[in-house]
Length: 205
Image (cartoon, rainbow, N blue to C red):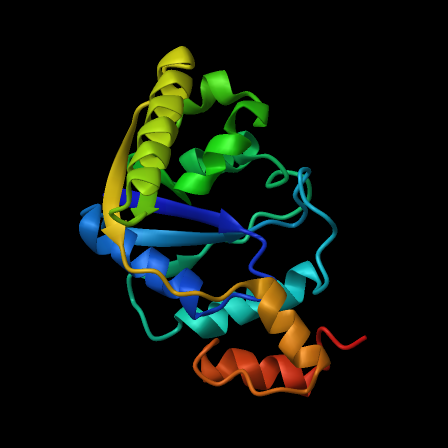
């Protein structure tokens, strides 16, 4: 099978994550998406919700989609994408892994741990939203694509791009702020996730 690997903080998971995953599943002709919450991420600040809470929210969020699956990788194995992929390849030795990400990874990609060895375990699947039709947008898209091509060729890492994804303007940061202000999360996160956040008092100051 062709398995998409979707790693992230998911602090919390929201409808933008789910829309992105579904589009990558469909447009990338994948069989399943594996959601892999990071216990900790070495290039980001500490998470506000615990690893257990974030895994639980992912489980609730994807419960209605049989092609979405939660993969829990604990301890230090999922601090780095490389270690996560090594572990997943042990679990799925006969399947093809595709690490899915947005095009914004271009700015941090060369800092990834053992980037030169990722190609042994996966191909990269880069999702891109329409950047617009202005000359400035065209120039930016050309520059980003050239940068990606250079990086992937340098490290012999196979990849392809999924084009013109539908965007959803929401972020986990916005959601955490709304919780602090006691605002509704309707249409931003799945209902069960919203209930979990407020029931257990997550993201309160």
